Amino acid sequence: MNAAPFLSTTWFSPDERATATAIASLLNYLGAAAAFLVGPLLVPPPNGTARLPAPGGAPRIQDRIEAVLYAEFGMVCLIFSAALAYFPSRPPFPPSVAAASQRLSYRRSFCRLLSNFRFLMIALAYAIPLGVFSGWSGVLDLILTPIHISQVDAGWIGFWSIVGGCVVGIAMARFADFIRGMLKFILLLLLSGATLASTWFTLTCLTTVTHLPLTTATLYTSCILLGIFLNSSVPIFFELFVETVYPVPEGISCGVVTFLSNVFMGVLLFFLTFYHTEFSWFNWCLPGSCLLSLLLILCFRESYDRLYLDVVVSV
Image (tube, rainbow, N blue to C red; front, top):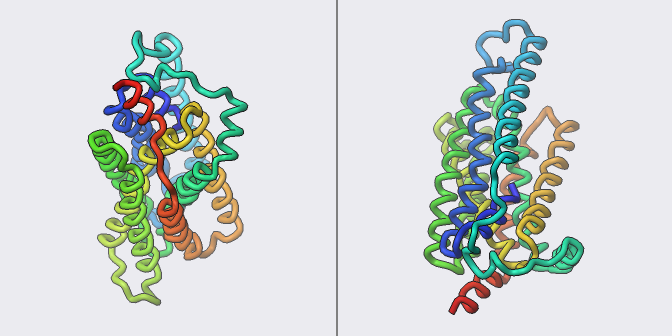
């Protein structure tokens, strides 16, 4: 995931970088969208929402999961072999001043990141909601089981939320390339939408308390909107990270925030192993994390050091 900003800086001009980052980073999410469809097709549903019990029981489910993993391993090996055979490190001529400039060493980069309060602020603004959302979407079928939504329907909800996020994310990145210096504004719009959508979904699941209509349409709409707003924010966050901490290498800054996101996802899933009989607390983590991220972005003072170098030196 953290390779996208490095590739876009190395290979693309300043007015194409955000779009390239969006395409490279969101293609990873298309694989996750495909998993939502492949999973129910190849692996029988174990969560009790199927009309008929899975034939063969647990051994059959285990065999199907192993088959999926072996197929994934084969595809990864094929792509990795192609990258080893031919993948040039950089173009013949650098597309921008930033692409040709020197970066800090690993040690100095980590010291710069850990001492940069503004970076830590937006790193938490990215890692907390994206980590919570990743853990939540990974067990979406379990969360929707108590309200009688099948694994297949949960898979379609996850699929369309990711596909919509990819489309909107690329569109937002293209807008950021046309009108530069708007990354913070775009993030505020996306996180506001994510906060409202996640609150809508959480209140809908508490239909006995809120008396909101609990239908397939409302669940589809709220979940898909939440996925669109959060997934489309990923490339915008990545570009803002790089601009904020330049000349720290792109792979290091984005690698740190990706690690933090995985940490928050792991902590959330760890608590899920103890509190797995009731999921209302899990649902409330979504609007809470989105609102916290929105507040952090509101307090963040943006800067565009890499873009400034490209524009000033080029002129």
